[in-house]
Amino acid sequence: MLKFVKGYMESIDGIEIYPIISLLIFFTFFVILFLWVFTAKKEYIKTVSNLPLENQNDAIL
Image (cartoon, rainbow, N blue to C red; front, top):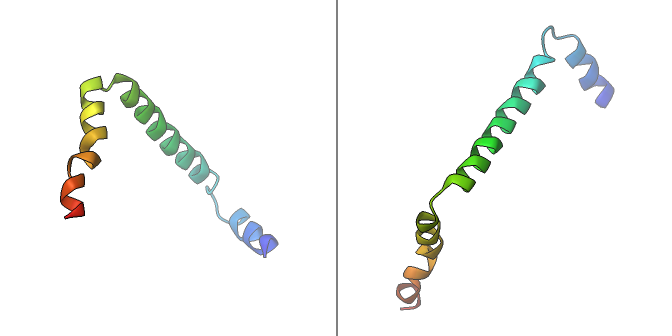
């Protein structure tokens, strides 16, 4: 099965650019996410982390 897929992929011109593009997209996404995490305000992080706990009494009723 792998030989069939590998042979098919080798016959397509310019296919080697797609893994590079996908790696760059994912790398860029995680770098931006990493930067956002370290630059986010602490007040915002606390507010968002307490959201699930605010409506806890409503769910029990």
